[in-house]
Image (cartoon, rainbow, N blue to C red; front, side, top):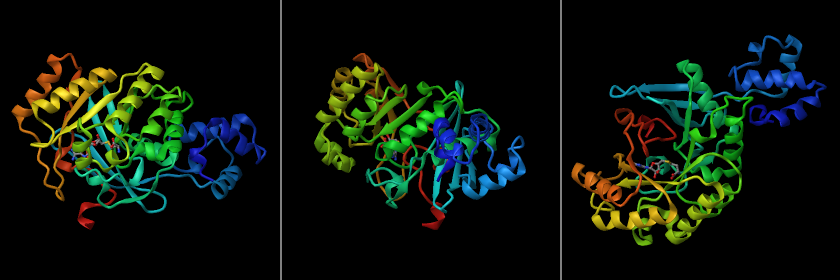
Length: 342
Ligand code: SAH
């Protein structure tokens, strides 16, 4: 039983089997999800006896920091955390003018196989539990002493491949009895698992959905992303339109610019058409290098021309600010173990 993955109602039901009244379970929920304690001993308004009993029955899921690296360029911090079973995941803390943002991992490793991404190189190990996704944010809050206002599920893993745990995590994160982070400040990025995107559209959540598009034709997308063999761009666009219709929330297309691969004028024109059709914003990401692959980023001029083309056609477009590139903390650079371990 993973007590930190129980929502408030489930915790109340679980603890009532020990004969605990609701106010007790509310206190315990608050210790875990607001005060972010890592042990029962810190729950000072709970009797010693009860703390010992809880400790024996329900060990608290906590993650421990193995290493932190700080960017000399922008102060971004990349954390390597050990999960209770010894598996490792990375998370990134970024400071922006509008508040602090944490990028979390949703799986140990990834099975999606995108050609330009480091997270998939060692394959997939397992899904993260809701508690393990929450703990990445809780641990960073404890360590930095700063409030986190934005969460992006853009670290290692495909969140839609861990659907149930992701939705539970989102609900607990945005619960007023927990950290109470605004749903609008949570972004979930997917490589495009169409059935899950449609299911998410029906959940009545406030989150921002980002789709890793990266190419405008199936042929080209297949060379970059194996998932394109399963779902066509046409199916993806239909899912995006459905998402917009159901939620009223615009999707973001993430588009990594790879030099000589997807950065021509034709690519830009086709992207305009797709974004118009789906009312999507576009977020351009100059591709970040990973040492095992030889993809290069588009040149400055090609990036500017690409952006210009989109803007001229009325598409809302931003270029993602690179954060923590000197510590391999940028998009597509997170791994499930230390690089030095090979
Ligand atoms: N599995 C999810 C979550 C990963 S999010 C997804 O695919 O969306 C990380 C974002 O960074 C995705 O848009 C991903 O395609 C992109 N990305 C991966 N490797 C990258 C790289 N080397 N440079 C730039 N962006 C990259």
